[in-house]
Every structure is written in C-alpha cells, then in structure tokens.
Length: 223
Length: 392
Image 1 (cartoon, helix red, strand yellow):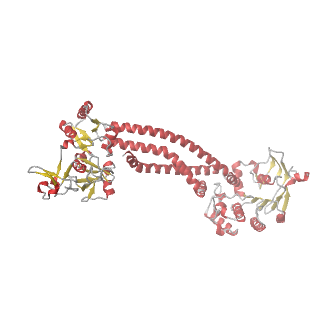
Image 2 (cartoon, each protein chain N blue to C red):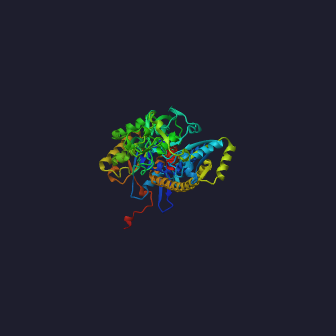
C-alpha cells in the first residue's frame, strides 16, 4: 500500500497509510482498539472497498485499476478470507462449505481432485468424521476450522484474517493459529491478521498498530 | 448454472418445512381458480352431453329441473308420476318412440330403473356379460352397481323399501341378475335396469300368489264361488318370481293407470318433435313435455355464473396471497443478508447470488404449478362423480 487515503462520508474517520507492505511468507499482525479502522484496512487490502487515493498492489497488479468482477475473481483465486463470525452457510454441510469458493464463481472449476483436497484438508483439521455435518451441529472451534479450510482450499497467496480467534477458548485458538501458521509456512503464503489478543502477538513476524494510520481518538484517553 | 442450482436446491432441502409450506400455499392459490374452472367446464360438458343425447322428456307438471334430473340421472323423483296410458298415447300418435322410466325404488343406494329394452338401444348400452331382461323379475346391472352389490350374472338382488315408514307399501322383491352392462361413464353404470312391469310388482300393483280356486284351507278365503275367490290377508304374495310361480302374477285394475315417473321420447324426425311439443304445449292437463338440453343449459348457465364469481374471488385472494409471498421472499432475502455478503466477499460472480435466489423461487413456483396441475387432474377424475353425487 502506498500513500493510501480513505474516509467514510458518514463521519470524520480517516485512514492515511503512507506505506505498508507484507512479503511472501511474512506474518503481519494488525492491532488497535475497536473502531479505529482495522477491518477497514482489511477491506482495502482485499479490494472489498476502494481507497480514495494512493495505490494498493498485489504483486504487479494494481487493485484500483481492476473492474469489480476482476477484483472478485482475483480475491477468489489469490486471497483467502477468514472472518470473526465464521460466516458459514447453515444449509451446507462441512464439505460443501469448504468447497463453496468453487461453486460461486466459474473462474474456479470443481474437479474430483478438489473434492479430495477438501476431504484431506478437513481431515488434517480434525474434521474427518464430521464431513456431512451441518454448522449447527459443530462446536465453535470446529466451525472456525471449517472457515479456515474454506479460505485455504483455493491455495491463496495472501491470507486475510479478521480476528479469527476472538470467539474461541485458548485451546481452540492455538489449534487454529497452528493450522494457519503451518499452511503459511508450507505454501509461502503472506498473512495479514487483525487481533486484539496480546498473547498471540509473538506469533507474527511484524505487528502494526493501526492507530499510526488513523485519526481515531480513544475516548478513554480524553477522560 | 449447475452450481447455482446446487446451492439453491440445498437451501430448499435444508428448509424443507418452509419450502413445502410455500409450495402448498402457491399451489392452492393457483389451483382454486384453475381447478374450479376445470371442474365446472368438465361438469357442464358432461351434463350437457347427456342432455343433448336425450331429445324429449314427458312427465308430470312441476319442476322442469327435477324432471330432467330424474330422467337423466335417475334422481329420486320429486314430481308426481304420470299414468302409463301416456306412453300408449304417444305410441299411438306414431311420432316417436316412448321409453317409460319408473325410478321410484332402489336396491340399497342403487336406483331401480323400470323401463323397456328400447332404453338399451336408445343409449347404445352394450352387455359385458349375460343378456337383457326378458321376463318379469329379471334385471340387468350397471357395471358399478354390480361391483357395489357384489352381484354376478345368475345371482340376485333384493329391492329396498322406498322409505323408512314404507314397511308395507312396497314388496322387497328378489330379482335375478341376467346381465351386466359395459362401463359407460354415465349414470347408467349405477342403475339396476328391469322391466317396468317388475317395478309395478315391487309397488304392489301386480303380484303373484297361490291359485285361490285350488286352496283347500278355507281360512285363506274371505269368499268363494264358481267364478270368483276373494283372498284373506293370510294369503302370502310371492317375493320372488320363478318359472314355477310366474304365471300366477297378475295385474289388478287397468295397467294404463299405473305410474311412470318420466318418459323419454325419441321423435322420428325434427318435424315429429315439433308436432309433439306443440301438442303438449296446448295440452291443459297435468302433463308436460320438455327439451332437457334447454333445461340443463339453464342449470349450467347458473353454474357458470357462480363459477365466474368464485374465480373472481379466487383471483383477488390469489393476488393478495402472491403479494404476501413476495413479501415473504423479500424478508427471507433480508434475513440472508449475512450469507449473501459472505459470498460476495469471498468472490461470488456478479450474477451468482441473483441466480441462486431466482432458481430457488423458480423451483418453488414450478413445483407449486406441478402440484396444482396434479390437484386439478385429481379433481377432474374424482370431482365430477362428486358433483353428480351432489346433484343426485
């Protein structure tokens, strides 16, 4: 990201990012208080929203020059997204949820090899005996593992995680983080993860405080 | 498209209760006007078809509709009977063939139709097995009647009293089944056909008993001389007509006075029909002649008017229901906002989400239309007999 500026029209919030980059295999942690723009930063990186100024590049591709559909295609092929609220489809079983990226856009075609990869991935995450279960019949930790598997099934070059362990107990949290770290290490995948959890900051190569880029003022400091 | 269909189908399958409710609701909204229209049209066609095939009907003055329904559908007659001499009178005029119908009695729920063999020729009724009735006490069954009464050729059926308080008014007569008709899909399938004289035996106008001249037990006679013997109530009438006792059956009084509920008249030609109608129009006595096609046509017009009103009501209710369904779909999409956003964020193509939602609605609508079609066809198969049952 280079000289990126972004503001919401509804309030005075602004983000100004002079320079921010993440290299292959690098793990970048983003921290900061609630409401200071962490999710907005992830949305800018993933192209879900467009910056007002500056440029965002992924390799040689300049994101703001892509059409909306091209951006979606790029996101699907090159990026994996993991959300805090898991966002699984309640009416799809574990395998179908993992394979969802292959069903929602014709740029990826669903082959027998992909199905096998989904099963292997699920099994490696301890979900081998729960492939036909629906999200409502899974624990919190299991649901987040499905969500992680869905992000990894496309073998992305960049993994973008928005507080993926916020709703998990320490055991499940560590399990999920181990899975993500292992994948990134094996596939040389870059990781950008937003987190509030101070205990996991030592897992990242670099930690960026978003307050350095935001005009956000913490109300507690005024008091 | 396959993937959109897969996701849409999975959603409907997972929410099967909601899907089923939607399909049923839409199917009923479509079916009510569609089924009603089909039912009335088919019913009207069937009613008109039988009426059109019946040129003229003669009967006692009174309700034309009742007389027509009695003659066409063998409904229990509500008008008075006419005398049998009316049949003879038409025959003497030589303008057409009169076919008498006596429909006063039943075997259980099945109407006994006392007529002549001319009725079979007039309606082109073919025998599935056996033969037509030839002598007193024989009967031919419609195919459905044979099934309902579990009767076969060579077996017998017994007439029922004409009413709950008619314990002595009519004779329970055991009739021999000599034939069963082919299926026609008309009220003829439901009837017990017998000679009109047999129905007079049931009514008690004709009967058979021991030869009183040969009776040796004087308690059976009130009076006896060389020419005449008067029976006491102790003489029992036969309840079955057999080759041994058939000759003992006899009519009291003039058979011309005996009752006939309706007479179907098959005129020789159009001119004969007009002449016959003219004579009956000028007739001041208690007999009327009518054209069933005209009477049933009026009945059908009434049915169609009611149908149109009901369809209008159905369409208005349908529009209201479809508006509610559109609201339900819109609400459902709103509730699925998080799911739709997730798919868009992950990278769903431009039309994917709308195609999934469209296919879901399409599947529900198609299944609802198929279901309403099945309901309409079922109504066509089972509704018409129901209507005929209601009419009768």
